Image 1: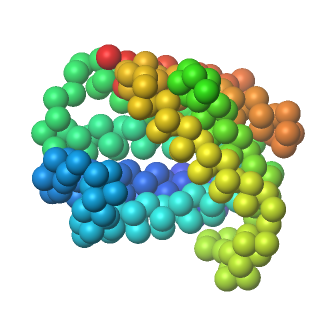
Image 2: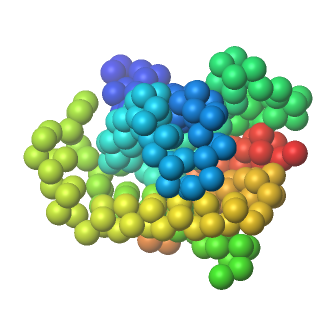
Length: 134
Length: 118
């Protein structure tokens, strides 16, 4: 009752760490692709891919994404998959926020509503988390 | 293969991949980070390989589908994978889903649809 009721345990940190790293990886890859805008004019698809993969941000983003995947494996090993997989929807929330604040993308009101609904759902999931634990 | 078939196959494999991964890693009792031996054992785990293959196939099919379909049509359908994983985890892994967890899953699905819809 004492130690088990902490809101965050290490296993939860793995879940949220995995989601955050995946989102940061995505955003870095996007930043790299924006930097390589000239590549889009390359006619050959192989030339274009080569240019994309030579962008430091793209490579760094892929690396971070890889670390996030390892953390995801760790998280899955510690929870029910029916608990942990829906929480990965936070990814869409973080990428939406990143699109807004890093890339100045226009976010329609409907999408902000979706962000709020996902956060509520993840909160509900968190509070259902303890029951399913084995 | 029609784009719609590729899309649904991609969504199915994406959900199946998560259940395969769970089957492979089981329930780890270790606190904190896992040991090096545990990580290395995953390389010899057939379920973990099945997860990787399903994930790669799902990604390839997704790209194939998106080259023909609008993303505003395809993306909201991704949210069905949350329901799929819930059903598969019950059928294949015997996970118990409380009513509260089902409600959370449905709320998350609605949120993803709102984020993705045009």
